[in-house]
Image (cartoon, rainbow, N blue to C red; front, side, top):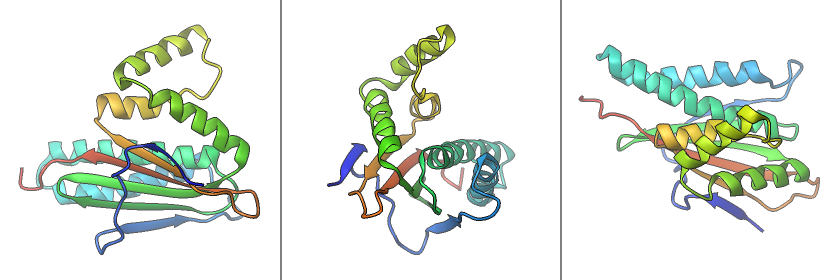
Length: 186
């Protein structure tokens, strides 16, 4: 059975304008440094079309990099062993990303619990509550601050699709995100 959290119509297409990167499990192990390196690469790749305007270039590079880094960090944090696939595209002034990975049952349940909390209300209000809870030490679960900040301050939209458990006990997870980017001609 498939479980969806977030916006149903956020899926990234499979057309020609998709950039796909695979982060493979290997002797160096997938870790935090891979998140930053990969998100910087995606951000630079997307921002290059804005190089005529230094301010647009910096804005797009920052926003796309922050969004992509958050997605990849969550994939690394919640994943089962195996590859992480990052897909990105820009169409109609919208940057779209999809991150696919496998997740074990217990972390999947924890992540679903977090998602049910952070998608249940106004992102700005939830962000303030989470910041306050973290400040006084009452938030013992994963905070979701990065996702809430992206929703509240950057206008990002998300969807998470948890697939059916596979015979090896792993669950496929697809995380979709979108964020507005300026028109190239601006």
